Amino acid sequence: MTPKFFSFILTNEEGNRVYVSVLVLKENPLDPTLAEALKAFNITNPKDILVPKALVLISHFSFTSNFWEFLKSLYSVHLSKSQLPLERYITNFVDEIPLPDKGNVCV
Image (cartoon, rainbow, N blue to C red; front, side, top):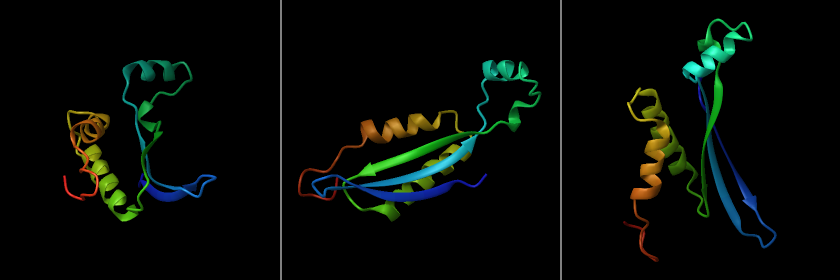
């Protein structure tokens, strides 16, 4: 299934905006425990089950096209059948890439 991208803006009572970009994809949870549980419901082929997953970026800055490119990159990593789960790449990005100093745009 093709992933869906959308974005929206949240505005609080003071007029401050928060920009949200979302990529929704569906994946098959290849968990052996789940496969066994599905047999109780007469589902013989657990590969037919798709579970939605949303990757969400929230920012005070309107970089929608950049966020779209980043989410597409994450999705391509997801498709590459890497040994690491997608969540590990996100953790690496959030925890190990520093923010630029105040007033600068470069890291």
